[in-house]
Image (cartoon, rainbow, N blue to C red; front, side):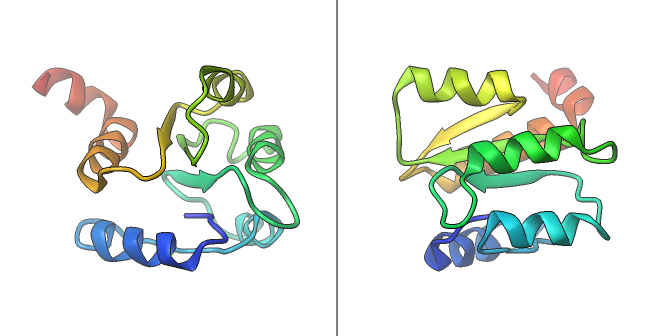
Length: 122
């Protein structure tokens, strides 16, 4: 989870840590450093962050060999279609607008972590 809003990080940690190991990082640059030694199963990132925005962070993630295909969910306060399209073109699998329903996020996490299982249950 990469978001400069600590309240969002805490919310997601509390909600998702029941079923997943969650690491929260408050900055895109710091997250890229963390990715040098770690390989997550999924990345959730905000768009509007200090130092490096989510677009640049996503672009960097997609340019790295080990994280090129890591599922990526973008969170944003922006609900415009053009923002979603930009994220999809940069390589995000999903886009969720803040404020969001944590249960919806949980379903997106499941869909991206277990795509075959999700398709069978559907």
